[in-house]
Image 1 (cartoon, helix red, strand yellow):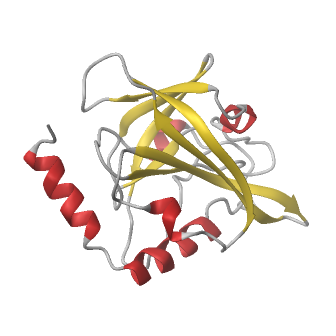
Image 2 (cartoon, rainbow, N blue to C red):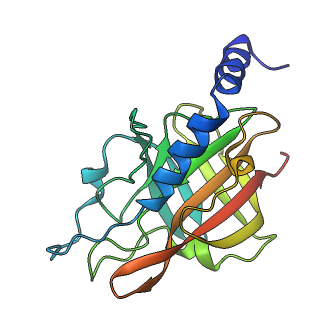
Length: 194
């Protein structure tokens, strides 16, 4: 049975207006991975903020930090390639319902590849594990259900739906040409039953 806290969360998310959600998410993914022109050293993971969880892809472990979702509707991952950010305006990691939105920098400066980039190489059907430090336990295994590469700014509202069973939507920039990312890579994953 879904707890009253989670029911309240589901009700809160269901009240978000469609227009606001679409505007916010289009803006957020469009700015996911700007590369600083003057970046010479990779910022440490501590530059990302307080760690709330962890994604483990094979033998790679990437800290998860909370990302603030400002009124402007722009989500920008933490200012380091060493962590991934979890949107505070979407379902939390331990949710029973809705979409948890996670974003990371595919690169942060010329010499700083994203630590979560191994996730991009996983085929549909492969698994990875997410650990939520607010929910002690062995972690939740997720299966990659779908992968997309889409022009920036073209994101169906259904990708961010806050109803229905819990799932993850993970985003980063892709297809860099002339210093500009032209596409967004999206990975959608569903929990594997324990």
